[in-house]
Amino acid sequence: MPEKVLVYSRFPKALMVRIGERYELLDAAGKPPNETFSAEQLSNIRAMITAGGTPLRADVMDSMPALAAIVCYGTGYDGVDLAVVAKRNIVLGHSPGANAASVADIAVTLMLAATRRLLVADDYVRSGSWSGAKPSPMMRPQAGMLGRKIGIYGMGEIGRKIAARVAAFETEVGYFSRSQHDVPYQYFPTLEALAEWCSVLVIAVRAGSDTHHVVDANILNKLGKDGYVINIARGSVIDQRALIEALTDQTIAGAGLDVYAREPHAPDALTALPNVVLSPHIGGHTLESHVAMQDCVMANLEAYFAGKSLPYEVKLG
Image (tube, rainbow, N blue to C red; front, side, top):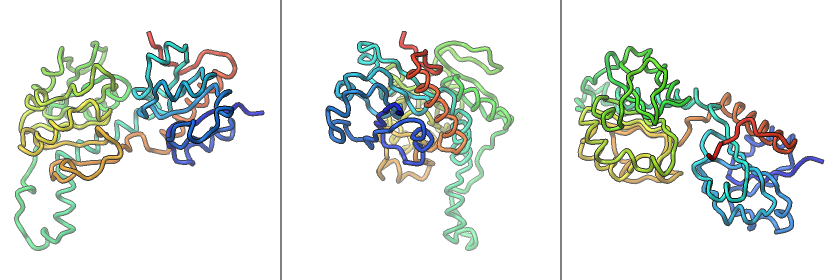
């Protein structure tokens, strides 16, 4: 008889097919489990699957007294209350690096689309302005990638892949992270120093209390009027209100965003701006990434139910 696993976050059903072939899945579809399942059904749930960014607090975990393993579908686990996990001795797993290549690709895509004003150019053609020879200040020549200084905040698996990709565009690459790494890129001792040096700041750092709103008005001011910010990490890393102000008053030139303070992101002052390129948190949303993340989820679940250490365990200290 297959082991039961609770699916907490709302996932497209197609993403759970492979996992469902191995386990009996109880799908809460993003709702509190006790609203979907009875206390009796939840009483013997020992493992659950969640998206790392979905808030997972004590009340949800407490509804499953036998819960002993939480497996995040994806790299992040910032939504999980780690203090509760530690207190209850729950083992936590994730999918490190499984979507790194895809996320790096979207970072470069957003960077090119923002710096070359691709959406403005697309509209220029579609609207008939090009064929009508209508002048547009937004179509002025922009700086290319040759010699551009790219700053990467975070030099983990994703950061390294972004660095390798942008270096191929004949750019200069610098980075800031909690520690210096053995990589062929210039290291900066502070985020402020990196922002002052670069013209494109790419955010690839893990979300947490230490990175909450760390990219604020001060950092954006240091980036300057010719600078761009690209965020493929978590929306919480940027002070979104400060970003809107910086884009509106042209403190910075533009931005490319795949993540937001609140998701899904509804139309607002940010979406009305012409100097920002937006995508709906699709950085890791490729066929290859999903297969890799599912492989990690199943490996973690298999190890847990076999009484072994998780191969992709998050070490809590």
